[in-house]
Amino acid sequence: MLDRSIAPKIIPVTDVVIAQASSYGLANGVICHYVNAGTQPVVRLEIVFPAGSIHTDQSSLAAFTAGMITEGTTTKTSAQIANMVAFYGAELECSASSDRAILTLYALKKHLPALLPLLVDIMTNATFPKDEIENQRTIRIRNLELQQQKTSYLASSYVGKALYGAAHPYGKIATKQALEEISRDDLASFYHWSYQNFSLYNGSMEVIASGMIDEEVRSWINDSIGQVNHLINTAHPPFPEDNNHKLEKEVLIPKEGTQSTIRIAAKTIDQEHEDIYKLVFLKEALGGYFGSRLMKNIREDKGYTYGIYAQLIHGKEGSRLQIGADVGMDVTQAALNEIYHEMQVLIDEPIPAHEMELIRGNMMGSLAGAVTNAFSLSDCFKTVHFGGVDYSYFENLKETIRNVSPKEIQETAAKYLQRDLFCEIVAGGK
Image (cartoon, rainbow, N blue to C red; front, side, top):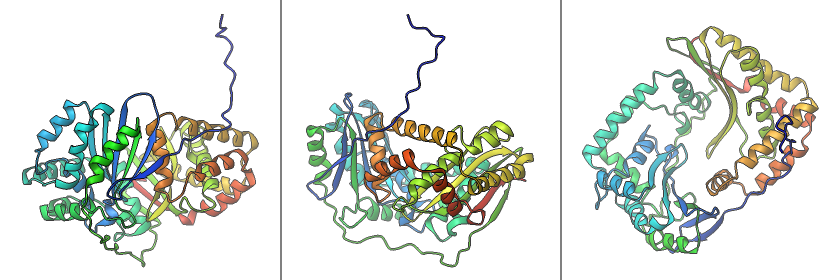
């Protein structure tokens, strides 16, 4: 009989095998990347478009367009699209980030023959009905007004502006006026250049499929998406760069209340840089897991916050190291002081051996947990694919986790945690 008074033996994770995605060309030249894994007949199909905010100088246009393309086509109304998706028990959404837009379909494999023509219809024949535009505009303005009441939104939305400048796509902040000024012609034009443009220049549309992606599914994708030919061999115009922008070192966004949001961020290296693996380890030590330096100090010891984190955010036009937390307004400055203190300690002192082993185990365990199904394996592919690297990234990361020394992490901290590299945004008060 199992003796429940004895804790189970801890078996450390020493390696993680990450199944790689495969790729094939559709009839029209579009590339489909796929992960065929799992035993359930479920499919996630992602159509990736060069339609993020870096492809337009109009604030909110990319997100507005992404939200509109499922609101009516030349063959179906918004209600008919929604009813069809619901009838087949599927999920359909389109969202835009800074770099790209992704039209995502979750469905059972057996329903793909009925749903793939709908995807093609949305990709090629969106009509942007005026009444739907106004409905979406009203919803977006109301949501924006609600978000602007939150210190977390105010601080997060300002980070890009502080780092890159207001002219940079990463620095644009959504406003009610910008949403009000977007016209149907703006939406249709952006859709034409960013969604209907199936040209094969670098950064054009591609497909990422995961789940039960057997030969039959790959054939269905080719017979539908692979037959679309809207060839426009013109890339987006480059966005304006603010070469004179200087880092905004300290920004205070006043907001009445009892809570402040802190965002501390610095431009940093991308995934192709040789230091990235050590920087990932350093980020983990600083604020990447529950036992990190920031969590122990600012949450467990001081009680200033329920949670604090450090993260690396990568984009096509820049990467950043960011620290964030929500704290009581009365302890905002104290929390800032402790964050900078922990950064300086990592510069001044090597991490003790027992802590290094704790971080190694946590990182390997997290990596193992990130490859549990076809969708997460597909996410691993997107990590390397959109980062401009290949699967050797994960092998190098594992090698670093296993073997990096405290001295190497200390040297990495001296490069990337210097206080003068960071901007400080506080929404609320000090």
